[in-house]
Image 1 (tube, rainbow, N blue to C red):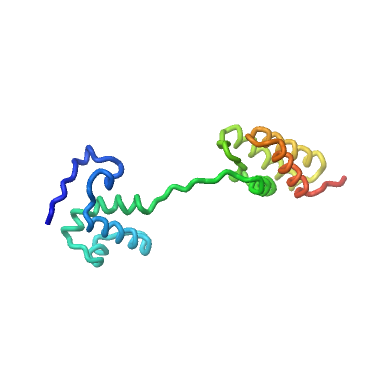
Image 2: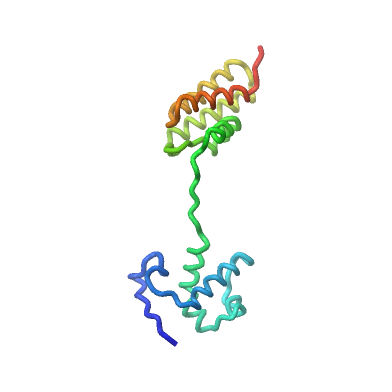
Length: 171
């Protein structure tokens, strides 16, 4: 059997599969670990033995295989920026943890605070509907939208859609 030389652990980078050639049995063990974890939520040495790996293979490959399994099981998800329909939907529902963020907008402290103020104004309007609350709600939303990097036409569209969605107040 061919020996695979491995670098010492103090020189090993974060992605071990890119640093040394991975033994085929190590790759098989990584795939088995992924399957076992998906089925039972964990991997035991006995499970690897029942999967056909010898004790020597388990001792030799388990750490590298676990690393490979973890790397293969995770993926980076990117959140797409909010489109006009998304912004209108989020503004209509006014959930504090779902602020509308179009392209090139980062959730800064100021934006999060401004969105929280809008959500509070929207909640106040639902609890105590009167014309002053409605105007305040729309003014706070307008202020939030002005701080976003969007075109004025988009801002106007969101405001009109939200204004049509919130209840009319008669005194």
